[in-house]
Amino acid sequence: MSDHWIFTYGSLLLRGLGTTLSLLLVSAVLGFALALLVALARMSRNVVLAKGSLAFTSVIRGTPLLVQIYTCYYGLGSLFAQYPPIRSSFLWPYLRDGYWYIVLALVLSVGAYVGEVVRGGMKAVPRGELEAAAAFGMRRSLVLYRVWLPRAIRLLLPTLAGETVLLLKSTALASTIAVVDLLGAANVVRAQTFQVYQPLLMVAAIYVCLTFIIQGAFSLLERSTPVRGAANLPRSRVGWLFWRRKVKAGGQA
Image (tube, rainbow, N blue to C red; front, side, top):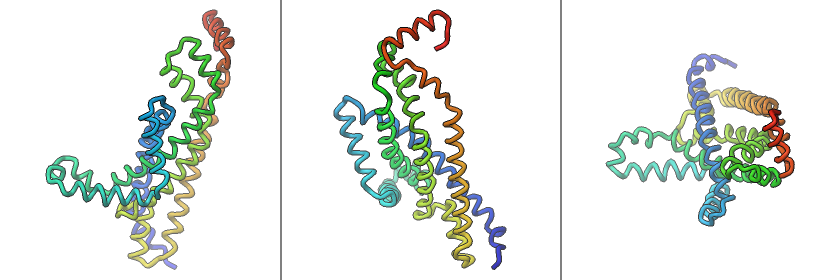
């Protein structure tokens, strides 16, 4: 059994690995940002925002990711190609690249799934803390960014680690639309060398290593996140009053 293909196609596999990591990073950043907006919309008192976000999450979570990828790539891609102004614009090199359709589908998927997760985490924050922060004089936006979101995200770190691992595995679907990610590179190697199992086993090992890295990064983040900043917040209005007096007296809350 010859392993010379590793040296022959090593650069191709490295480029595929770079594409996979790029898909993971871009989709995670944009997807988590969209998830926060979806969670806020789901909890909004505005009926249009609440119902619209509910419809969005229901459609995305109710359809297979592969169907969404094909819809974005073959649907939107074919639609854009029919308009000469789009083909002659500076956006056309991006709109004809399958990479960005994969990113779009992954971002929408992460936004829907993680949005519901974030909403659950925000609802898990004790209501008394939010009321106490409001009684302290904080504006609603300040309560959201200083108390509510930090508490919710701290609670959700283990779940977000799992969602990131799922996103990593979802990037492998990029190979279905001719984007040469890690799995796509392995398929090229298999087609040209007739090595059926070895490239797949190598790719599987790389995915396992990336999973351990993601889990380790989130575990480190969980340990390094100061729980005291959230846990020591007063949980009642009386507690906030004492905390305020302590701060004015020069102590530390």
